[in-house]
Image 1 (cartoon, rainbow, N blue to C red):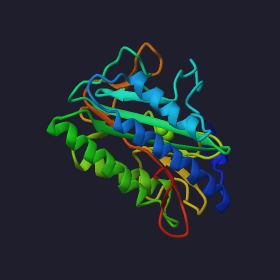
Image 2: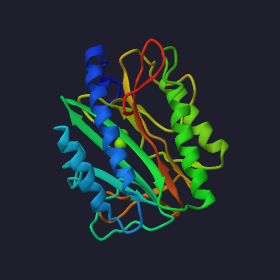
Image 3: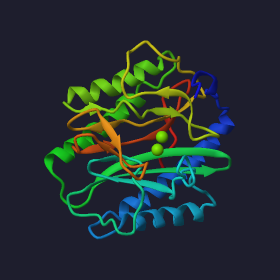
Amino acid sequence: MDWASQINIKTPAEIALMREAGRVNAAVLAAVRELLQPGVTTADLDAAAEAVLRSYGAVSPFKGYGHPPFPNSITVSINEELVHGIPNPKRKLRAGDIVSVDCGTLLNGFVADSAFTAGVGEISPLARKLLQVTEGALYAGIDKMRVGNRTGDVSAAIQQYVESHGFHVVREYTGHGVGRQMHEGPQVPNYGVAGRGFPLRPGMTIALEPMVQVGTPATRVLADQWTVISADRSLTAHFEHSVAVTEGEPLILTVL
Ligand code: MG
Ligand code: MG
């Protein structure tokens, strides 16, 4: 994609519509989070997400996306699986797992995109630290989403936060503009140099999504052509919010 030409500044009315999609997306993720228990399958999580989406007259832009077409409404990625895991009726959650759930909501012509990672039952101290650092990196990035900054300031804040805690940011998958399309410009990597990149302007809407791994920044894709894992199979985590740049504070769109 030509990221620069795909930056679409939204009007306040359009941001209000995105906020509605974001509320629905948050409701979907809250419903899925409630179900995280041993024995629940990742297909159960997808079914619950679909039910909430349907109740709002919304659909997920994930379904049918890409090649081969993604078959479900959410992605569910466990432990060394970083992103894009395919829900499966045979895959049961186990105590100690950390589960990343990513959902998109298409409502009124606009997309919201958000993800979280959470533990099933008791998780290890390392897993707990990984979740705290990855979520902390998301908020460090959001705090840079201000007029006067550039996308590189956001990227650098995420990278520095993660690396200062001894973990690694993934290079192959990045944050992105979001709006009428799930992926618009600008691209916002989870690594970068402060002061570089695109200037942030009011009305820009960006999905920030730190993807963090314990052992290595390297990833690989499994034979299903979707599931991305850490190359060394170390633990991974992923948090994401869709955020609007305003004249003032950053506006998180994907909360209730
Ligand atoms: Mg996402
Ligand atoms: Mg995204």
